[in-house]
Length: 260
Length: 335
Image (cartoon, rainbow over all chains, first blue to last red; front, top):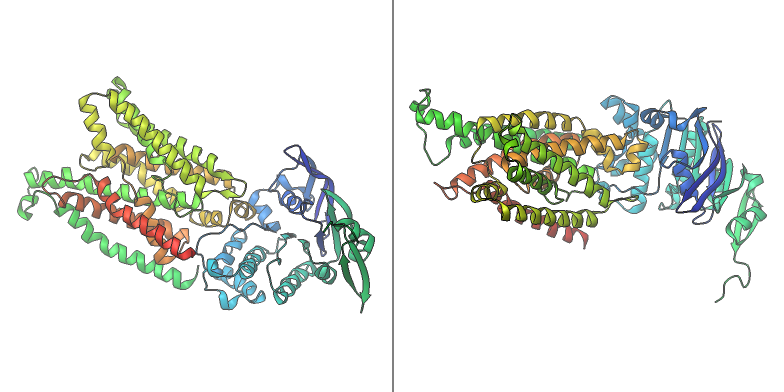
């Protein structure tokens, strides 16, 4: 188990945002976290990343307690993309991606070659000299994802990403998730928060369903993404059908669920 | 770093170094008394004394103060992740000035003691640290630093410090009143070798240590969480920055009074010319700051010669309109 956490409980202002949450991320596996707004998905990701300390519970990365790792070593093993990206200075796109490679401690030429690879794979090359602040929201998100992926080196074992493709167009959603898929295939443990059930079905090995700060189900995608589970998770009626071996989802509000 | 940006940073650096010698020579040459070459070769002559005992320490002071103010401005902008942060605007200088005035007015016998000369800089440093920590505490939210809160806190702290300085001026005698008032306007007029060397002794290590933080400051600009996730121990970085900035600003304030806008305008100019990369921004700001403050000092001497203007007034006269145009530029950029 690459990243394992157990009994995570986090209280804020007397409210339990997470209640004895267990998470296990396997090497080579891509896990998608699903859940309604306010379920605690981002909070859980922050806790797993070490940005917030839980009141109870443990987190182990590669068998060692997360808090015991020196920060630079943690940055080499664990790459994280949070939702808020407050960069407000006119860096060039390539410069932003280069900042991601900082923990790797590469030489200048090596670093550039490394980042060029990610610019290419995320189709950012034509933007590489543009001012980051002049890009559209989806493009900025792609640059930030490239920065986080540029953080991955030989020692990287786990990636945590909070809605990394939420602002992207369809093509780039697939493109980026394929890159995450490839990193998982190469042996990394990957956790991604998504809202799109179809994308989840295409790319996930496992899913983790989170509701009101508790884990509803964590397990292999096919077994966990059932109509009853998803209906209970989102409080809507979800129907699942198989088309050419891939699950398709349709959802609707139960009749009379909302007064009009 | 993008090669074109890197190149233009190198070019700007080269340009500034080329300007360095003429500015230095002009600063030594220009003044109410015109110097003659022949007299300069005779140690002890009037011209020799003016050059080596008045103008040279003053030049050292303006170069060092300009470099320190500009590089601390650039650093505080990275710390607050906002290009409008400035030691003067957010109250660091005022806090340092308040503490320094308190020591000047109430220090009495202490000032004449063996630690007298460092007492004022020390107090200014403490005042600077206090205000920086205070503003950061007030303006920091889990989502980052709020610009509005930061600037409002700065206004509040500036007016509190001004009021407290006013009270002390009200109760001080004629002599220290004149001293304090003149000093607060910012001036390098009374620079002697001991203050020039004190500023060098503190300013040089402050600049050198800040220069090493370039890449970490770049990472901080991505956001505090992002910097932590990239392996920066942000709490320690913040602590180092606050100490160095307060030490640098405190020393400059205690020796030269309130000299505004250098810390705001210089990094902004450099950023416009060659981008926000702090690895280039910090050294270029120090260099441009040294040059600009020396130029301002030359103007202070020339504008109303044979009298002279406090240098704080010159930098405010130039910096104020520049700041205003910056705000207008940003406004247009938004709409």
